[in-house]
Image (cartoon, rainbow, N blue to C red):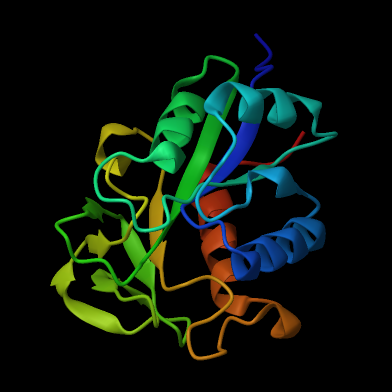
Length: 191
């Protein structure tokens, strides 16, 4: 039976730096970015985001979610949960982005990539520096990630930043590596 679900990668960041980086990487790999999903915080609800995903001409589709530092479940997380659990959506993986918040908002991740491109079991901070805790990433749009079952959750620092080591003008190499890891681990081969 053919799978008619749309294949998406969820990103827990939505500021302008993230948008420019994700648009660039989506274009590089032949995917599509839902640019309207960017915002700090997310302003679109999950149902509208699903409609936009379905209109994208091809997969994988990149979608951004951001809570803008809101503690607890904010608009970005509500939209993310809706999209992730939709019957017409297949989530290939989540790129969990670290933030400066430490108000107990953290999620378990499978692996992190530091700002030098090194894969590590340790968490990373928003600057892409490794932390001491294993498998834990602090961020402002990660509160619900433990409830979502996906092939892989990759933690990284702040997209498009990380002391300019992930700037879109140099191709956002850290974010691109995270995307490549999601595609590899999910077994996605395109269609």
